[in-house]
Image (cartoon, rainbow, N blue to C red; front, side, top):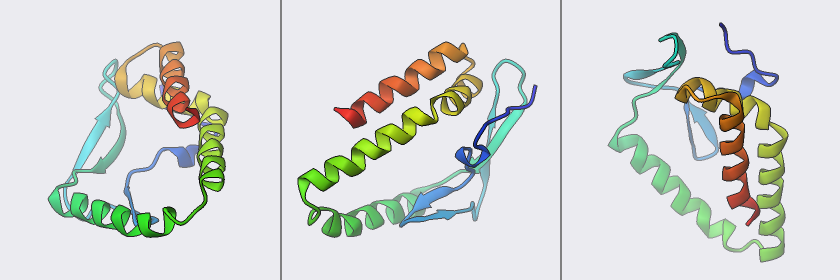
Length: 119
């Protein structure tokens, strides 16, 4: 059974580093549905270089982020929470297919994760 999402763009097969999606430049890993063995996606098999790039980019971005007033930062993070919850069905499907969990449990994990953003 193919994975059908309302927003297919939620399933990405790249690293998000320094504000851009970076496709794999080396090996990839298959993400499979444990119930069927079918491949859902391929993702980069990232290593130390990608991790270092991501950490360096996050460190560089922090200089600007720390200048944003707390109220504005809270609004940005609240918007992130709202977007996660607006896409709970699709994100729950992804969790369900990747982990082999019932859909209700996948959606519950999304709500639980989003609660940390709201908190």
